[in-house]
Image 1 (tube, rainbow, N blue to C red):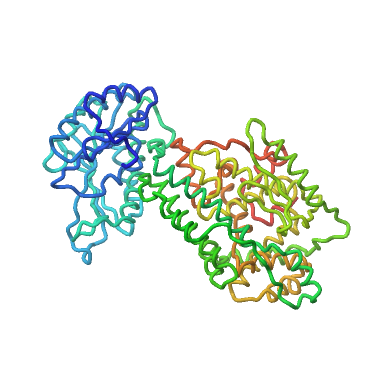
Image 2: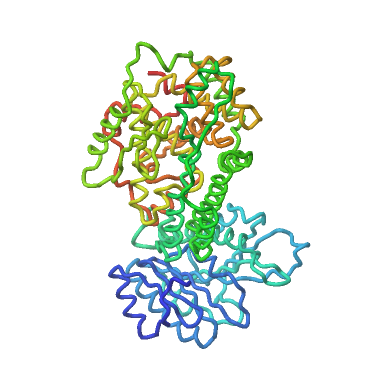
Length: 630
């Protein structure tokens, strides 16, 4: 509520605000000392809570935080009575627009049973008037409630029909909106306040957020069902009933997390600056002496980064989806900052495993099967033509220029002396001066780096919140999976490349189980027949900084993308920014709520007919080995 206008909304202002609302100006106003009125835009409903100070139960506003049309009435009966006519005005306006209106009143029921004897149930008592809503609406609400997981509590639901439903001691709002005219309807929902400690009324914040998230989903599904059967305007999805508000707390948190994310470029700072020299020495020793790696100095102080991180007002964000995204990212950034300080120590591996967990047994077994089934071939084939870093940079400039159109990617290409290969950092392409690339894979490499990593950086920056530019928590697997699929769609995913990705899983597995650099190298070189340089680079990646488990995400990500495509997801929807598979549902929700926009730019390979044919084929269900079929 801290983001809202500080001046109390006066009764004579309501008609002007409603008129402005129809013209596209949202209402977001303080009412009295503790209330507020918020409507993003006209909706066919209004959620109401009347909070009476002498019988006040904390936290109810969180149950309605995900809704786009909310009236939290102030604390005294006199103030509430003065504002009840506003409900009538709002109802009249929304009936004119939608042909029907639903008033949803929510109030809590205090749970008085001692904590140690709680039966772990949460009850929802649905009250409706004799002129109630359609059974389909009540059924949608009840089914939604019973289908959700309520923080370990078993949901119970019952419905009662009453002449004048209302919280204890208050007049019924059903009569205020004239529910008997068949166009205005009322539902009251009494919710067990399981988010409070029964003895002290202290809020359990995680329980409250969990209950609030689920409850808002239930309300949206019920209101969606109401709109489908009563409104003249039919929404396409229940998420459209949710708020479009992006509060100042969310904006500030997004800005802080984005800036810290840019400072904490974990891959860049965890990668050695002397890989080429270390390889030359390793060769001269006959692959018998462990290489010594050096790392670039940090450019930010751990203490300052963490102070800035926890100054972000994430806990003031009321929207359940946005709070989840930012709170999850805060935890990941905290761990990444610690990892930077732990480079070269055993703790780095422990931190890495918190962000990139162990390879699952199915992933490990599949990686072994790929290495066994794909015939080894040298990455230094004498007949293969390679291009230099300078030549690749020229091709990169050409691709960037061809992709810009009406949008400026603002991406730079740098050739660096301190990199072993190629990477994207903060939307720029970095190429190691000594790196060389197969001529046959130039397009694939650029579609991996530019057509995925730089493109999603750009698309994320074009969104209302730029955390999608640097990435939500755990975004790496989906991001790298999309990048490898881009290689396939552009015709450059070779058997050797897929075998390399499988080797990375095995290398990470060996590091986690205590293998030395030489152990991992000789497993790949001697046992699995990788050439020495490929084995060295894969081993370096897994052992860098003390043990970096990130490299499992490439094969894991390919499998995730193939599963998403088989489930019917569109590739374009996965390129809106950098996020994890676990966020796909939230991304969909935010798009329906019109908080997120479609991609501002798409990769060039999607304009190719053969790539489109391949993509359509992937929708039928494929595994990574199938990508080598043609």
